[in-house]
Length: 412
Image (cartoon, rainbow, N blue to C red):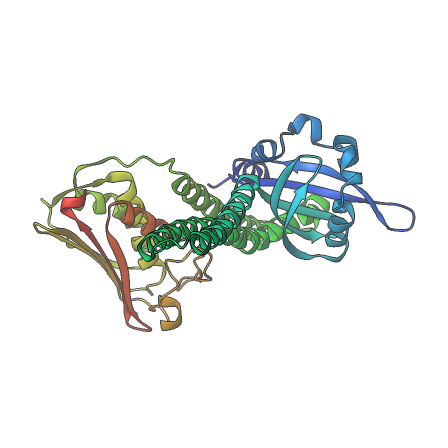
């Protein structure tokens, strides 16, 4: 982590599960947008467009996709407005040339340049169309059933049975529609996270890099050390964010296997303690592992390790110097109960109900300015629920926070 570079940061972006591209707008002699160049893109760009990076980079969109000029939606003018005027826009649009629907977030951090993050939602959109057709079919079925009942004077019992079946079908359609809407909401939340938590540090990162590349000789050694430290901290935080985003996306796609086995929880907590020892000693935190040394339970090691790592890291981050962080656990015939408690600054009541929600604005600085991504507790909730367990928090501002986890033994 000491020598993270812009190239390494770009490598992380290129590996992200969403499409990414960076462009420069081209203007005519009157300042009107007439084309744009592909300056950079990631591997998901190829997946979501069907275009090879070697055929796209350093070429204009009209060279790569000449048919785009004839589409109903004016992509060049729309992106040109963002590149010239700044701001962030999120929209849903169909590309007639690529024959795909996209959910796009576009923003500009420098005049004449713009960046896009996007997902191919063609499948979801078609599912919504199919759902609409099914709803229309049901409505027609209802009308035909009613007319048939009137024409043939069917008995009340037969009519009630038909209505019951119709309502059951409507109920199934409603559930399907809600699942599709929830899926789109999750995508919206993911875009919200990316637009807010990646754009700001990325803009600052590029700004410092441009400043150094154009006038590095004017800085003193002390200033360069300070700038390097700032770059390192920014890159580390963005790296953690992207790492958490990748892990969260793998969970959503079901790509993380669940492998429960018998493990010692005390030993697991000790491993996390060793990883956090530098931060614990730096802040003079009194860390207490009160888990019985012989406590063995059935769980997925990697998942519960991620849970403990996030909870203990947060406890250290939000506890002032000289405070306490205590980990406890006990096991009975029905459940495993775990708690991570600190004597830190606490969580405001208005934020308590939001800490486990995707897209909620819950990230904040630690007691000594330590950054956070806001995704750690979301991963904790996903992994605890994968164990059929529950996680909740109790906190009071100025008096500390206590996270509880229960995992039912019989459901593992």
